[in-house]
Each structure stands twice: as C-alpha cells, then as structure tokens.
Image (cartoon, rainbow, N blue to C red; front, top):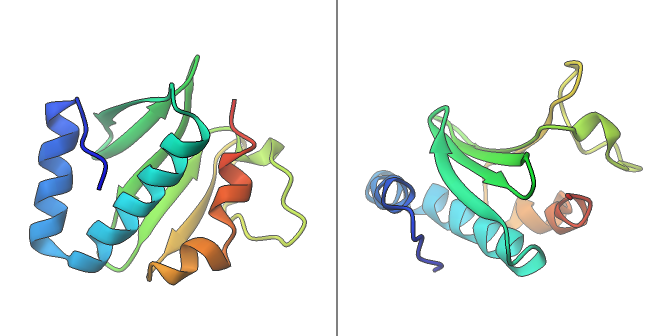
Amino acid sequence: MINSSDQKVADFLNDIRLFSEEKSAILQRCRSLIFAIHPKIRERMMYGGIMFSLNEDVAGIFAHENHVSMEFGHGYLMNDPDKILQGSGKFRRHIKFSTIEQIEQKRLQFFLQQLG
C-alpha cells in the first residue's frame, strides 16, 4: 500500500477501505502502477476522486457503487488497438474495474505508460 502525503487522499483511501476491501485493493493497485511508471506524479482530491497531475491533470480514479473507474483526460489521443477504453466524449476516456484481476486484463499499465 502506498501512503499519500495528501491528507484528503489518505482519508479517502481509508474510507474506501472501510466500505469495500475489493475497491480499496483496486484503488491501491492502480496507484501503485501510476507511481511506478511516473514517480513524480502528484495526486489530490477533486471531483470526489483522486486526480493525478504531471504538468497538467492527466488522469483520475473514482470509486463508484459497482466499480472503480480510471479516467484519462486526453484519452481520445491514446493508442487503444484492442478498443478497451470507453467513452464517446470529446476528450475523456475511461476504463472500469470491478475486480483487481481486470487491471491486468484491461492493460492499465499500457495506458498509464502513454501519460505525459
């Protein structure tokens, strides 16, 4: 588990852990991947989830009732040969995770490597 230096993020992660171990595990695994790939990324609470920034906001992770969603602000520009990304808006695309195994199945690391 990666601790956050942002108290609001830490509180959010703790609240999710108390509510759902599965969602907590998904959130923590996603955070571990993003920090491993982008060690200088910053995180903060915004829009009810965790926003990740490099020079600008690049992604966000949100816990919903039945899934966790990783959203990419410029997802429409991402290479997505297997059509994993969802969404039809002008810019943003997302991936939904209901289980921790889906993080690998839906190739989150591949998309995180495209950030920045």
